[in-house]
Amino acid sequence: MTGVGSPTPPAALLEVRGLRVVFDGFAAIDGLDFTVEEGELRFLIGPNGAGKTTLIDVVTGLTKPAAGSVRFGGRELVGRREHHIVRLGVGRTFQTATVFEELTVVENLDLADSFRLPLRSLLRRRRGVSDAVASALEAADLTALADKPAGVLSHGQRQWLEIGMLLVQRPKLLLLDEPVAGMSRSERERTGELLHRIASTHTVVVVEHDMEFLRRYARKVTVMHQGHVLREGSVAEVQEDPRVREVYLGRAKGKAVT
Amino acid sequence: MTWGRISLVVCVVLLALAPLTLSPFRLGLLAKYLCFAIVAVGIALAWGQGGMLTLGQGVFFGLGGYAMAMYLKLEEAGSAGLPDFMVWSGVEELPALWKPFGNPVFALAAVVLVPGLVAFLLGLLVFRQRVRGAYFAILSQALAAAFVILLVGQQGLTGGTNGMTNFTGFFGLDLTDPNGQRAVYAIAALVLGVLFLVAKLLVRSRFGRLLVAVRDGEDRVRFLGYDPALVKTITFTVSAVMAGLAGALFVPVVGIISPAMLGIVPSLELLVGVAVGGRFVLAGAIAGAIAVNYAKTLFSEDFAEGWLYLQGGLFVLVLVFAPKGLAGVVESVRERFGRKPVEVTA
Image (tube, rainbow over all chains, first blue to last red):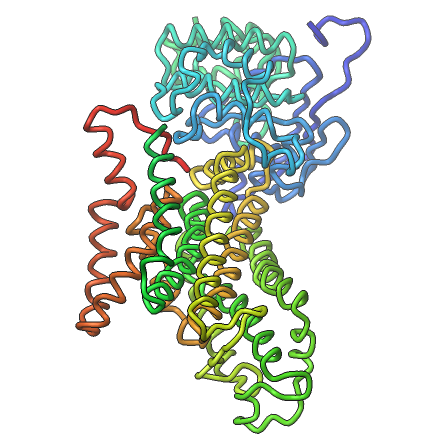
């Protein structure tokens, strides 16, 4: 375990300041400040349209902000191209897992693993399976399907493969966008365990709607509302905050707050 | 031995026997088909593996062809003379652009480097701006049209509409002699073989896997830390170099290079062959290019006007009913007969 509870104050890994994102005149994010420290497992929640995915899109270079800065390990990310940001150590998954269906599971992982190789060595054929790929196969529980095309995987397996692809890249910061959406109960549980294992060695930000999942696995929660941060704190603190109840939990009180 | 290996050996044997059995005229035709097959390998890489529908391979074919033709013309004219077409168009002094092409090393380098460089710069410009799909296809087609206009307009430099013709020699080979023609055929077959292997290795490499990933999920590839624009640019460049080499071989094989062979229609014809053979399988693309061009010769001898309709119909039929082409049909037949399907990604 790193970060949490360590004696020296942990350095902020991700610092978002004064962020403003505008889509067609509508401010999806307005004046957002957001900090993630090294070693954290942070949950990001909020009603639809709160700007959670937009925030991830800005951090990973997919969306250009109108104003504000995103500093990662002291480096400004705004203005960098997506693959540069990945190379600095920011990895992400998407709401709908996208894997390369024509490639086998192991080829998917191998491509993720090879991204730091110089172009010259990419011209060679893959020989065997690297240690990182083998352990990711195991973590994602896909060893038996290693040589099957990724197109045959179930929804849950795709999510795990995508997380596995992220893991072999050894990012400093993982951004997971709704990793358990659409999963069955048992798949959610497996994902939770996987998440816990990952969080013990990585800094992770999870966007999630599933409150049960949140209560089980979250440590610190950031609640977003209408493009800014409404509240930050532990699961209990957040759940007790009347403003949070009003804008978010209140709407599904019976289901969400217990 | 796998099916792939067996068919490869059969093809090599057939190609080796051809000079012994075919008349010089038919052998020349086969050599021409092999040139188109070289272009097909490049198209199969760019389109089949990389998803770049390039409708303008005629440009790169032409750049390679003209570079070679310029050298051959200068070689023929001797140190003092001018190429024949320049004399006819009233050019009195050798244009500066032509001068370095008197050197065979320069000309051969230009055959590879000019198409490669044009494709590389174009690729950087276009793929970086995320131009893709139909937009890229249209752009590449417009390029072919513009290229032809440029060639036709520069009568004194390029021979205009007529292009360049009457090539008699090729690096010491006598092109009017059947033995010289056989040698040129052998070179074309050899170049095709080598480029086929290069392409196959490329497809099987990590880069080849990456290329498929870019084809199927360009945006996802970015978030793996790769630059898809670079992957596409490199592949497009390789396919352009192949087309350039094919054009350079086409000149001694057919004895003519003119804008009519490089425009939109011939560029599309190259594509039809690849589609019919199967763009996802390199060997399929080669077979398709040879078969379609052979069919074109057959039909053009008997009823020329019908060919265009037939070709168009064939293209539509293949895209609608067998999008994977003949190679896809072979694959499914093989699967039906219960054999373990051989790896057909390459």
